[in-house]
Image (cartoon, rainbow, N blue to C red; front, side):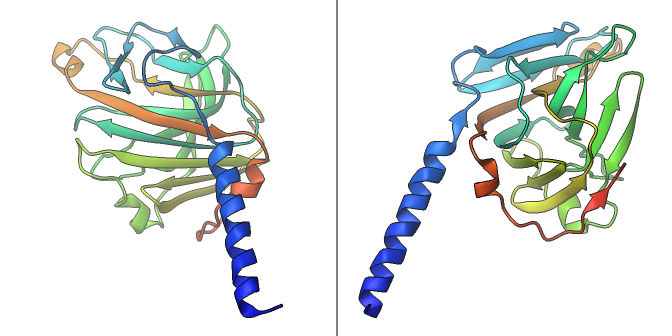
Length: 235
């Protein structure tokens, strides 16, 4: 086989792979309304504006409010873009499950908090928010590159999640953030979390937006990316 024919065959295979990869993505948000999603928890609001989901906090809410998918997912690759005001904190949950009635929150699950506190900056780390308490499962303490991956307020950030079996990987703006091995949550919802707000009405004004939410659920292991950080194994 000549080198030209070999190059031609490689090009065809790459093209076919690319087409298959594009076809594997499915939108989770249609950009028009919240079909396929449900609000649980308190009374903070989620609205659709200019093709994005707008997250809006509400004063005097005693617990968190969630917008979750109507479907549950086990193994998948998830991507989305998020933008937020400086004073707005929120979370992205994967494999979330309903919490007991006695819990402070309506959903448990793996949560990536948009954590732009200047003394920590752990956006892309993973913690387990389970009702009346929580614990960090992975942090960015030894990952300064990821600590600085989040853009300034008002700009769009890109998130990628890979959940294959017990391995959970997270990227923020293409930067390796988390590589966690944990067995607690096997299947669940994808959800956006708005934190409860005290009586400070002024904090109702800051907001956040999420758009271009898409997922691969069919053979996601075919499309995983290598991540160049050490795995954190948590029992």
